[in-house]
Image 1 (tube, rainbow, N blue to C red):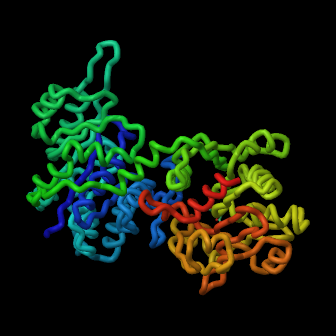
Image 2: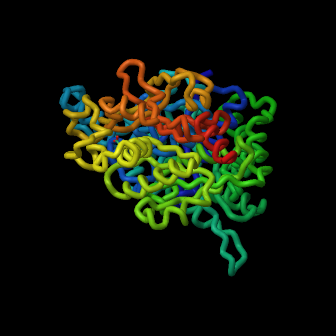
Image 3: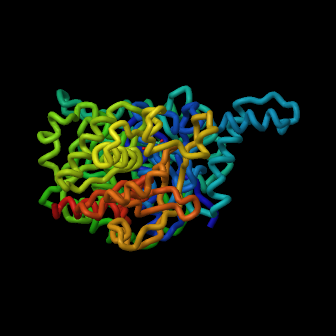
Length: 532
Ligand code: GLN
């Protein structure tokens, strides 16, 4: 079958859940046996989100091939369990960078380089790359931002051209918002009409509308929207607030979003898939009554998206342990020896978050010391693992000035140090140790038992590493290096076997945790927390 391209655009406001709608549609098509991928086009000028701080766009997700990506790629992977790559996340910055490189290379043969056709051609080339290279049946492209933004114009222009070129093989799904005015007790469709007009001004006629709403849409509202927006009434869907985002695919299937898509691209619809494993996950969410209380220690507590993948991995792990996740964010800058007991003693487990720089680092040591001394299940991720090592060096090995050279270049006990290949790096973007690396686990370790494997692959994002000069000392004192890279021998996992569950990973296991395939280390951690 020829690749079908589906664009998902958004209007009225951001945060309507374009990523979830894209992922849900992908899920439904995948359940029908199609080969599906999703990509995100972000209109900002950064080359990738790797250099953005979490206040801007939340967490930076990392793909298997080491791309620092928009967090929506995390939703895509969690929903459809298909790995994304660098090709699944394009920004305006990357588009311009490619075009400018080609221009310097003389590829444009002396022509004036312009937004149309050169930038739009580059966008179109990138849209189609996954379809042609990997032979996907469906490539779903989410266009970031909101219709009407200056930045998104070249993307919409490319969609217009592609719709024209691809004909039936191309569809546009537009997501908008229908507000409810409580005083008038009315749902209002005007913002939707305006946002569709914006799209039409760009020459793009949406084929399907998804209306985000907090109240059920009446048949009347749907008819009205269909009439004003040139869309068939059966192609107007509602996306109503649901207690769990994992219900969205089911809600969309009930209304027939996937079958309307198939009809419109001329593919036989066939029987509706049951989505049994997905439903069983949802049932476990709703049936869990007992709670497991996990404290996440980090410096971005006011920003739930900063640790998106960790939250999701913990949620999946709790669900697979038939528990409700009670996640408490603990601000590492506010945690100290004086309030540790008060803030940590009622937890079942502690996760110490990844991060960069000095801010809030002392609070992480306090949490780790508390976890270690109280035998509370404790999980250190990336910087969290490095802090585990530093805390152990300070309080067990007695090196009171032990540190990472990231925090103190002059420390005499650099138990965490810059990796050799990082010493000459001067550019910030995309230069860390990124993406999936292999790791061998000691068979008797808790980590190996959790994975049920001694050879794993997980994704990284860091510049610093465990300093192997200290390895023997740590091991003698009770902190074992149980995971290492088979080629470079970098230490990837540490644990204290004496304790119930005290494990730190230099990698980020949260990136590989999906709804139907939760990461085993998270599942095991939550299990230990429950059995505490
Ligand atoms: N800042 C640390 C490093 O670069 C840890 C990074 C992280 O937690 N992702 O090594």
